Length: 491
Image 1 (cartoon, rainbow, N blue to C red):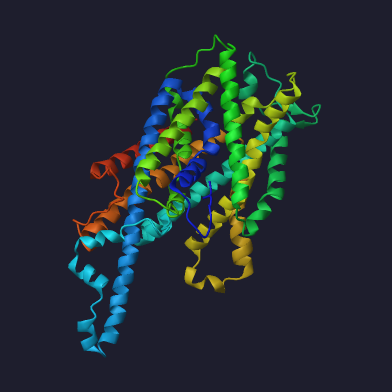
Image 2: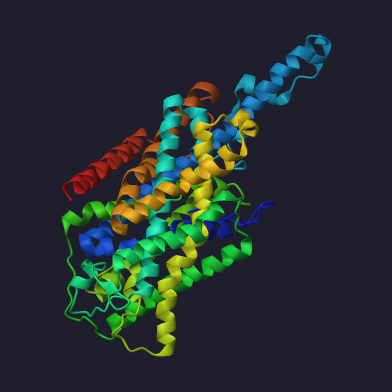
């Protein structure tokens, strides 16, 4: 999801910023969690989602620590550059040099405790800039490759989720609680009096989406604060309605004899992929944290945010697992009215609102994620110093097309949203959320010991200071990749 900008010219309170972090994380991934919860078993899923929230928070603290070190690195290099520039002038006036010693340069030379003042979160140093500071050329290429793959996966998931929602609204499955096979073969039906198959209708919806939404990728699209408020309100309303309706089903005893599985280990890889994807904010975190007007308790506040998000996911997923015998891989589709239901006007409007929810919210995010992707592609393949020399065709046509064409092709070839989330979350997502923050903080700490001083305190340092935490995160990321790879290649 893209970073929501509060006010481009000012700060916002840390609590407003935490709401932005919450909204950034709780997106498409949350809609896929109930399905994978059911596949892996509700107890195993509960334990694992808490564990993954904890590991996700560990790497968030790594990003915060590295961002503070990067701020210090930039400031110190500026001072060193100022010192070098000043020496040429001092050569002409040696007496001035002896009388007017630059205090900040003296701090650098003496290495005293005042160096800690440079560790801050005031400047938004993006992960790509951090990679440029602390990674070698191979590391930078791997970083941008992981980020681009993740964003490609994001766009493919958006396209698939929107097109599935459109096709289900146009051609709902006539299912009942006792006829679960329709959930498994949801596209093996005909629509509009057998005039078209549902899979063909889905592909037509992909084409309509490409024609209506993708052209915005060729322009500079930015959200306004009021548009963010509207989409945020819609998101909260939809999730609250789903939790409330699932809770009402449980309260009225619907499916009282339904006993979902507690442990199903073959569903573990899909759960890992969806959960990794569902706790992702690392690639946008610096832009969200820098405008905080009070950063003193940022780590504690982010811990609270992750705890709240984890609780929210558990509430959404557990009510869904126990309320429905079968769960679609996009949870909102469980609330789309089927053709054999007789509903009041209010309930029908409510259910259609849930069905339209992914269409509205994800359509507004798609162009912004696509623009983020094309900007990273330009950074990877073009010389940033010569950007003005590239023509209109290269900058305005070639790279936007490269950003949107592969996701559209993927959406046309598959409608398996769960598999897309699993792949994106467990490969590129694992790199962005686990491996890259761990390697960044490892290299940033080496830089601090070598060039700043081992005894200089970074007040934004991660509470997980022991190097064993870094190796723990890397080992866990490798386990995630192995489990998902086994599941993908055995399917």
